[in-house]
Image (cartoon, rainbow over all chains, first blue to last red; front, side, top):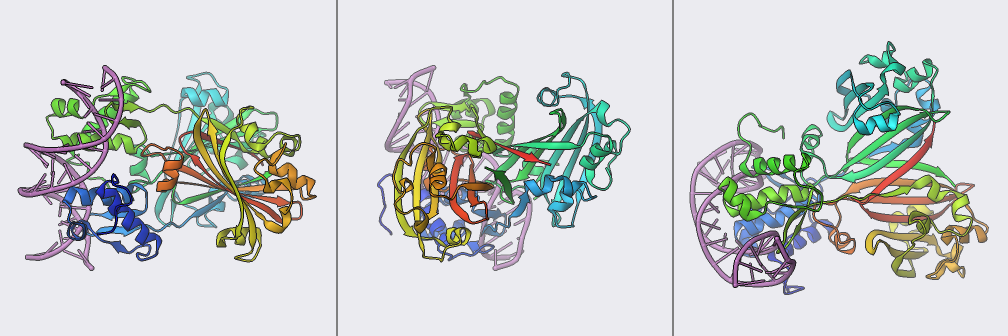
Amino acid sequence: MPEPKSRKTPEYRRIANDLRAAIDRGEYQPGQRIPGENDLIRKYEVSRNTARDALAVLRHEGLTDTRRGAGNFVRQFKLIPRPANERLSRSNWGEGRSIWSADMQGRPSSEDVTIGEIKAPERIAGILGVPVGGRVLRRSRVHLSEGRPVQLSTSYFPASLVAGSPITQPDSGPGGVYARLLDLGHPPARFREEVRARMPLGEEAKALKLAAGVPVVHIVRTAFEEDGTPLEVNEMVLDGNSYLLQYDIDA
Amino acid sequence: MPEPKSRKTPEYRRIANDLRAAIDRGEYQPGQRIPGENDLIRKYEVSRNTARDALAVLRHEGLTDTRRGAGNFVRQFKLIPRPANERLSRSNWGEGRSIWSADMQGRPSSEDVTIGEIKAPERIAGILGVPVGGRVLRRSRVHLSEGRPVQLSTSYFPASLVAGSPITQPDSGPGGVYARLLDLGHPPARFREEVRARMPLGEEAKALKLAAGVPVVHIVRTAFEEDGTPLEVNEMVLDGNSYLLQYDIDA
DNA sequence: GAGTGGTCTAGACCACTCC
DNA sequence: GAGTGGTCTAGACCACTCT
């Protein structure tokens, strides 16, 4: 067979490298099936576990999807642009469009909205500037794109700030929660987003139907009033392969 | 796709869940060793591969590091803050501090700086507005934090723009390349960063010494002149577990 | 029904660290 | 040297898809 580039590269990695190179060369297009376990067993004369290990490398790199009973398929990445600055500009939410619908080009959708008052978790209390255990309103939702769950979002507000407002209702009305904060006399003036990449927890992987080897983007957004008072903390977990985050910055 | 948890969770997942729960409960602190293959074989009376599969789950979730001959250890996350807006403000690079040293609180370090003129790759040409195959200057470097490689960075400039300037030299001088663009009469006025999360390619994993199951953050930053002319494209690949990206946004 | 991947067992030899 | 994880073999039964 081909020359080992290094005596000590394990067989399963060499096989994985072969397959990856073939994908990069375009021999297997997105959505197409690549050779399966039995193909690799025959071609490379290895045991089943070694063939499996090779395929697992690609799966964990996020290059392929594995479908039981069918095979391994080159994954396709279609990115959802997420222009943070436009999304959060007052001219956007100030005029009856919600942040999320702006995202989806007029095809808003979310499900499993759950709302309730809870005792502030420590990290949220710290950001919102309320006592640990103080009351906060929690709004949780799953956002869909083309029927697929792509984002988990949980917002926290000081309970006293939003009591009795539509923010406590599943449908927060035109312009979303930021427009309602404006109605309450507390328009958000600045936002800060803190972004991390990590692997999903088991629950997140399930809720977002993530394939193995797909990282998530974890965003914590804080909305501030003009005077610097924090109004809302929004924790989001996005399918890392599906999103392209865009930020505009002035020099 | 949906998990048939109704009945049977595979044994290796149950073991992984047990271990994860113990880590979450704090029974194993960051840096501490968790039970190894042999421990699991004895405790759960499973074969070695099943025990290995359980440990692999945690490794691929990024929760543990595996050290050959030593064991599996709870990973510790120390985040490097990366405040994008401050980093890129003119008051920062305009006064002799480089973007990177601002990052590192006065402990700049980078290695393997490679500079050369190349023919513009397609995606770069498209952003910079130069013909495909046109000449661009490429500056590549590896950034270190505490001796550890944490970021790969490759910048592209239209070759004609920067010819003869210190930007073509390994040491671009005080304030870095943005200060030099100012000297050339083309100060950057706006930046756009496009952020994605994905699993590292083999080369990236090696260059950043990434453990298995650690995603990378892929950032493409474009610097624009006041009139919207693109001046530079900087492609960065960051250790996803090490960075906390911070963006400030006005409503 | 044939083929696929998911899980699991019970061995083996090796390279590495130092519990 | 004992213990650890890395790689590999050669079987097995199962659940699932339909290549």
